[in-house]
Structures are given as C-alpha cells and as structure tokens.
Image (cartoon, rainbow, N blue to C red; front, side):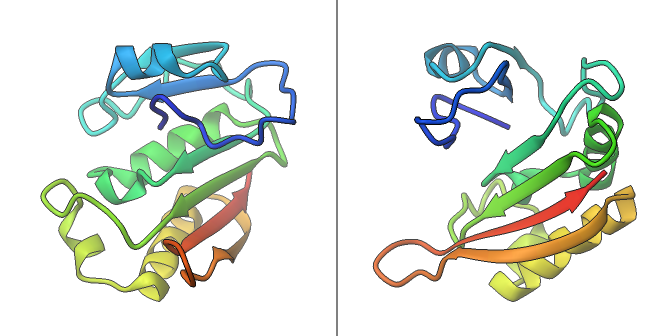
Length: 148
C-alpha cells in the first residue's frame, strides 16, 4: 500500500521494492519502487505475486481503509517467505469518510489491538506492537508486526 513515498530509510539499499497503490501516477513518482501495480484491495484482495516470493511486507497508514483486511492479510501471508515480517503502521490520522467504521470508533490502543487481531486471524505468529513516535511534537506512529 504505497503512493509517491514509501517511508523506507534512504540509506538502506534493497534488491527490489514492489509497491501496490491506487494511483499509477503516484506510484510512478516513488523512486524507491523497482516495480509497482495498481490495485484496489477492497475490490480484489488477491495479490499478483508468487507464493513465498517476498522477504518482507509493509502497510504504512493504510490499514484503516481495508474493507476486507483478513483476506488482504492472508494474501500477504501467502506471498511472504517463512519467517518474513509484515509490519502494519498507523497514526491517529485518517480520512474519516474513507476509514472503516470500526477504525473510527477506536483509539490508538484499540487500533493496535485490532491490527493484532487481523494478523492473528490471518495466521501470523510472534505479533508485537511498538510505539515509534508517541505524538509529542508530531503525529503518533504505531507499528504492529507479525511473522509468517
């Protein structure tokens, strides 16, 4: 779930970075992506990637818009290699008109618990949450990671 920026550390080099998004122009502007594909995961959660073909997966500030999160997370599980991490990060910001109703009814602790549940139900293991930024001076940023 990417756009014109992928939030990856600029000093880290990756063999390949694949981006999925809703806007081809934004994906094309993301210089970190090796390749990308446009897909609405709410309409079609099946990823066009081979089984066990990815070393890691990231969902940055997009989980709140997923209408079929268990199906999407199960697909992420399918494309990850054994032991690979899937990190879901989020803030307290969102487009309320686009976020699913359960997300809008929860606070950050509730969001972390919900993402943990999504990961658990999809089959991820060793799930842990981490506060990356506490919100002092900027938006809070929380990450929940599970391993395939």
